Structures are given as C-alpha cells and as structure tokens.
Image (cartoon, rainbow, N blue to C red; front, side):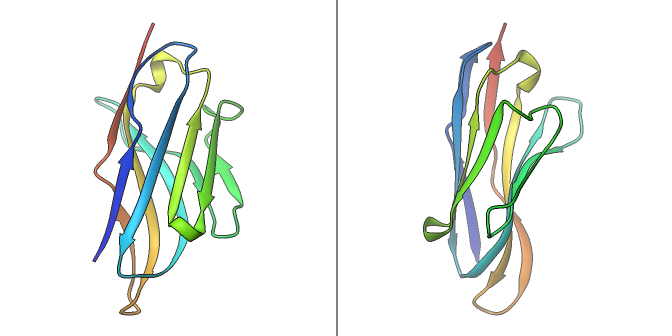
Length: 120
C-alpha cells in the first residue's frame, strides 16, 4: 500500500506565491518519476511539472518560469514552488508517483488533491 499526501494549498492573491508538498509513504521500494497535475472545474486534468529520480524536470508551457518542482529522495517528497500566481492557476492540484513497491509491483499512485485558489 502506497499513500501520497499533498499539503500547502490555499487562497492567495494574484501575484502571490504558494509552496505545495507531496509526501509518499508505505510499501515503497523505489519511486521513479513524480509529478504535479491540476484540474480546474469543467476541464481535464493537465500535467504541470514532472521530475525524475535523478531530478530531471519537465514543465507545462503555462507555468514555465513561474513554477519550480523539486524532490527530496530521502524523504520521498516533492515540492512545487508557485510564484507569480494568476487567477487561471486556480485548480485542485494533485501529485502522482510511479512506484515500485516492496512486493515488486509497479503502479502509479495519486494523492487526494489540494485546492489552490488565486483571487484577482
């Protein structure tokens, strides 16, 4: 069993910053890629940023230069530093992880999501 728990969401004014965290726990042997996704009301879930185990990163064009993903392998945790937030960044933010468990099974796990609301 693997669990992902996000934290750090909230309400912020446009131009402000937030930092999200996502901690993985449970029967983890190794975590491969991890990432942040978001889903706004009435829209599909979209990839925001991903990071490999050796910290190579990839970003959606909409957040490049404003958001930074980072990873602490020792803590099985990723972070998303969000700066210069815009109202269109309002969404539920989810993290995911590609996990090889101690049972040697591999699957992608998702967190429960954290709400980010940016007011204009």
